[in-house]
Length: 196
Ligand SMILES: [Zn+2]
Image (tube, rainbow, N blue to C red; front, side):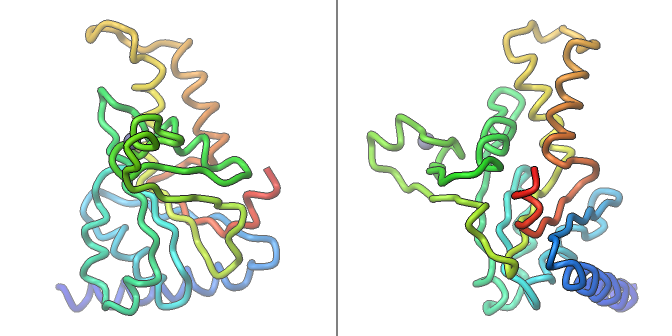
């Protein structure tokens, strides 16, 4: 069973590689979707055979990346956003870093220009997605979590019993669309960013 899965993984990764390579001039966006725990993140991690990955982990699923050979792990820049229902930081940070410019994101809170961490001189990661070349792919893992984060952000001042309606789903859909969000994981060659 595991052998079959690995064969499938190799097929998928070759397909993804060909698709991404063939469209490098214009940049491209790919989605990997499937049931939980089927190996989506593992599959995308295999792209380190061909590309560098700028990986945003929104749900802590990045632990599978540590199974990759060391040389492949070195090709990943990992940003972990500690997103929860009470602290929907992914919505805020993703929206900011997708815009042109350099942003300082603290490792502790995953927040852009975190006042507390800048003051305490805590570890900061500088992110400028528009400065990446076509050897890089940006990975959002995963987009369902980003959708939840946006909704949590929109309803953060409401009571726990509040049920979202049109006023919340509309802006959530808008924000997701703006982020090119559709499925679980988005792979993105950076030139796509410049066309937005
Ligand atoms: Zn911070």
